[in-house]
Image (tube, rainbow, N blue to C red; front, side, top):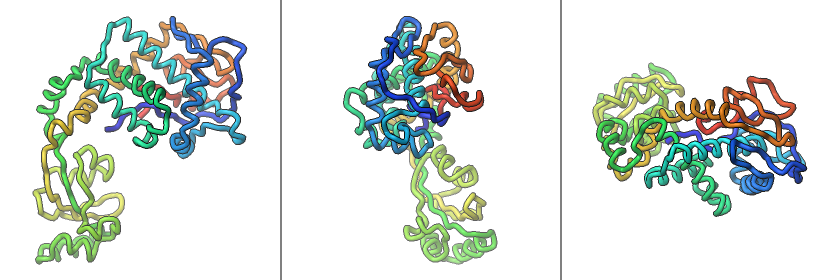
Length: 339
């Protein structure tokens, strides 16, 4: 499942000390106030998770300044913008009387864990903040379902699953990788002459990670194959008969001979959350449009110590007081925008 939650994008590296503000709020979103205490608590909760901080640093979105006594402006403004966005969604949900289904709650937890990288990284947050993160994601999921007019109940998702079986077929495959089409043709000729696919992979494949296992690359859905191995490989396995070597296929790494070893429909109980996520996919664009509108009708005031109110990519939110170009500012985090 690929979603867009709790992602921080690189903007600018000014520094902000985590000191007490002389103004009694961090931001005011319509009728909701985000206090300095709330913001500083969330900054501490996130910054104390070393695994997540390392992930942010790897993505060129560092949490701390060089002295570890200050936060980057990027980090502070992303956390504050995230909280502003969630407050906008929650106020709208109360106004529209939107409630959460049990399946939405389950999906929210799975997406939250995925969004921070792993279960172990999620476990690195304090228990109260884990609950907060899942609650935030639940708000996003429920609003997307409302906007997309999607029934995220087990019966509703089961109907979607039944009409999209092809998206939930687990395909297992193997490959033999060669550096040129001539080499691939030569190996394919040996297979047609009687050499088993596994033996050919063991003797001739340039893919050292799969060579010892007879060329096995694993199993997944068509969407997962396309994400990991690309369109050419995916197109080849869609109609390839089981246990039949394909003609050489050009992929990024070279030329691949492919064999599908099995196809099986993933049972609904294993595919339910994935199906719910797939059905909700177009809700992201709708949420983005909704947030842009809400940001212009709900008044936003921001403590100037954290930045200024600015239109960033069509959404009114926090930007650095002395910040980067408008192009860089358009990359600010918004749940409905980040991928």
